[in-house]
Amino acid sequence: MDSNNLLKQLLMIGIGTTSLVAEKLREVSEEWVRDGKLNPDQAKTFVDDLMKQLKSEQGNWETQMQRQLRNALQDLGVPRQSEMDELRGRLDRLERQVRDLENRLWR
Image (tube, rainbow, N blue to C red; front, top):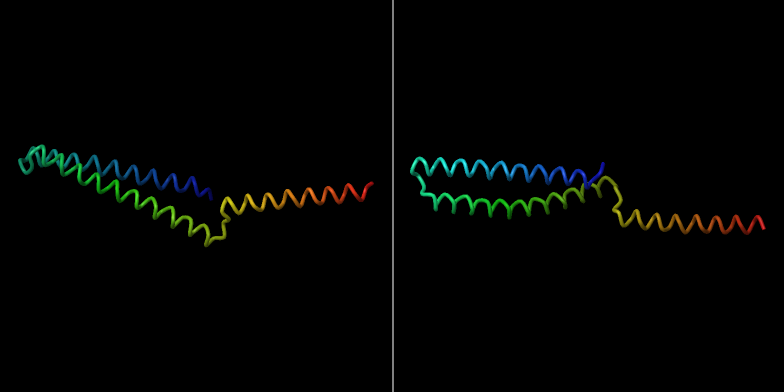
């Protein structure tokens, strides 16, 4: 499972949901203006305030999703990139040592 791809997909779902909510908020506020329940300035303020709150919460949601995904991958035993890099370095050193030993035996 590619964790970056999964995270990107989850973020895109969040962005799509936010866009849909923004569109619906604008539609509702325009309807309230037409019905005389709000004046245009109140409707704009209403939509702007809710969008600010949504964006703030989306940032928190993204952070929580990243943390939960990291924890889930750790629970599954999936190594972090830094751990993989360290193991690759160790493997390279061991391969060099084996080649050096083989070369000494054949001399």
